[in-house]
Length: 159
Image 1: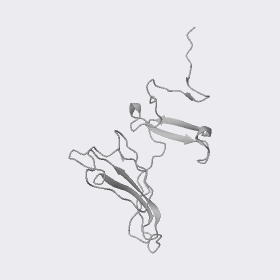
Image 2: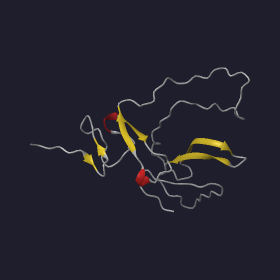
Image 3: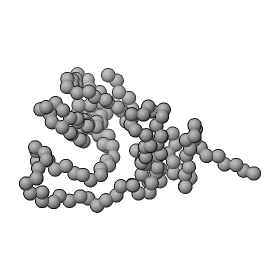
Image 4: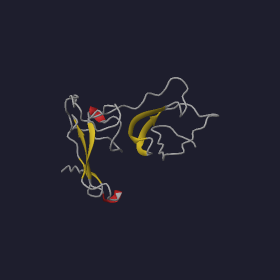
């Protein structure tokens, strides 16, 4: 008799319909195996400690949310924001920035991808990604009005 056991630990198991469909050693890789979409279904509140989280990672042929792009309608005199920027409600995904071919330091490599709130009332957030391939040398970066979490995708950073 040849027994095959489920992989997993602590009553958390992994199963795949096609061998090689699950990523090894990670939950949400940048590119999932076999061109699948990685999605997480959470069964606990975000306030639960990590050790108590119950979740399911699925790797799907198509994303669970698919819709045609939304189109703006004439909303006549109804306004809800003070500026003229149209907010796009479509789902978004993006690939990492390409590594620059010319020397680019941290400051020159920052790209803003999302903003929320109002700068003058000092309420809101900015989300930025960066790519760099050279050190700062004699240049310096100083941020006096925000908390920043800087995480390298690859390689190492020294501060």
